[in-house]
Amino acid sequence: LHFQPLQAPELGGWSRMAKFGEGDPRWKVQELGEGGRNVNGWHWTENDCFPFFKEEFQKSFEGNYVLQNVRDAFPGLTGDLNCWKVDKCTGEACVNRRKGNKVVLIYEIELAVKWESTLKNAAGEVVSTSKGTYVMPCIDTVEDLDNFEIQVKFNKEGAEFKAANDFAKTHGQKKVREIIVETIEKLKEQAGQTCTDKVTSSNNREAEKPKSNGTSDAKPEASKQQASNADHKGTTIELTTEFNAPAREIFECFTIPPKVMAFTQSKAQVGTSVGEEIVLFDGAIVGKVLECEMNSKLVWEWRQSSWPAGVRSKCSLEFTEPGEGTCRLKLKQTGIPYSDAHGNHDMPRVVEEGWKRNFFDRIKMVFGFGAPEFS
Image (tube, rainbow, N blue to C red):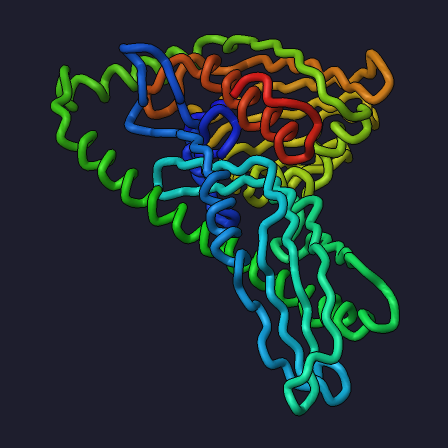
């Protein structure tokens, strides 16, 4: 849902949903035409950074001794481990940048690294040597940063290779994990710096732009629109999308906090008990559970922090399975105001884009439940 005060990475543009632990009360408007483009200077961009990932992994591993002269790698022996080739690096990675210096790094990478392990005795003579591959089938944003699988493949096995193989598995596997974590942390830091530079420049440009009607005219207009919001019952949006997963798994993406936090990259409170409080994007969206039919229907009261005081909407989600392993999700949201408390108009479209990009497409991208449909 594109909601005004919050920068969520994916609900069509929240102003503040980028970093875990930080919130923003505004949904992001990505494109509203010449007259409404970049409302109030809130930006949302998504840049491909997979080439950067690949380059950094190559720098970290290719032709590098990640371990050297490790004493007692095997009783009485010292060990060396050379990672000499990135054999495979595929997947996708992107940086979502939002105003307020908010950055979300999303990635799903499959990595394979060739290695050579060598053990020597006190005289420096080679006692055992072996080659193989470290295979990381899925390094992604969903799991904790250091919680990914590393498979250790050996080219040869047997008594003469056992010591070198064991060294690669016990000592080398741990070191490879550390290097990957350090590389991702480095990318996160660099992505944040890049975002900060671009947003600062953008803020300066927006501040320098003259206002066509002057600030004195804008406030009365906003006040009129707020009064108008109080007089009508809002508008309705309806959306339908499909996921490559059973209805139960998609239902859990809206009712289990860790799953919600995985794709929103922010703190969340959700549940299935009627009356239970709903908090999304660090409080940019709040409400409560009105109805719940396990794995088939969910109805929320829904209010965005940027909306005029007292304005609430009703959101209904219906989960069906038109085929095995497929979930069709139908959304109907009523009572959406035409403008927010800041005088920004076209809120129904902003909310709709938010649902498409920050819920539907983000769930598909993070959990692998299909290709993005709206981004």
